[in-house]
Length: 301
Image (cartoon, rainbow, N blue to C red; front, side, top):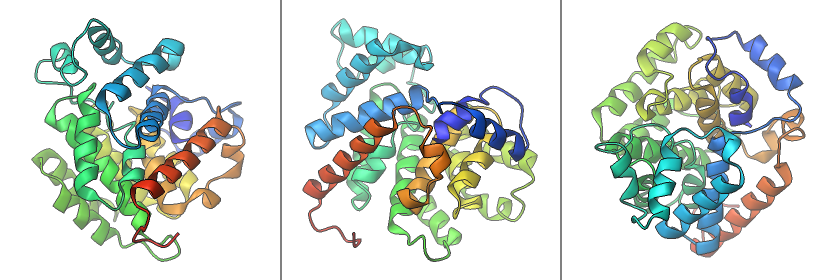
């Protein structure tokens, strides 16, 4: 839903929240982009393989792209898919497209199922986040962005939405998990920025809102921390920052949804979400896969 709401505002200026809410209410249906399309493919692969299989995941991405190439894919993934079809290994092709690998947010935008499946196994979460990123984004900053987004989702799951979120503790855990200075400095600025979240110019100047992972993942996490108790407010705020609105909205929504649970998602958005029934069934299957992986989870059901 965050992707679909953000897609209607992508590339536009920073907006007041009322404008975005109006678009969200009037879009029929809420149509998603490549962000959700690749998230679906990632989840499908994790479910079918009961865990990570790089070759299978790359093939699933390629198959889904061939069916719906009009979802708004950037130039990178189709070129990677072409190299893999020609016989290049799934974990090598992306490095041939961008020297040193891509540090865009394409791996982070689709990573939510990894955060959900491995929420209670942070070492495995980091491993799979890195491996799944290699398919299209092999730069360390691209992989780190995906890892931090997955970690934010895992931390959100572990929290009780019935209690006040300890934002300082949440941020501290992310700082401990981060390794790259560009992410650490932005996460460290959350405390000050949360005192003035309505100063969106300052938020964007500090955190960014672009297509680079380090200029969008921190903005998405911050959007959640600014409005943790309300899904629509989280997404609308994320989109109001402008820039890469579909991806930032998608990532912010993924974290907030993991925190609040499905019962607190806005029904008026859910009812209009494109392909909702299939996505819902896929979520159930991912949950069943998680039970097979961790039959005795630490968090009560």
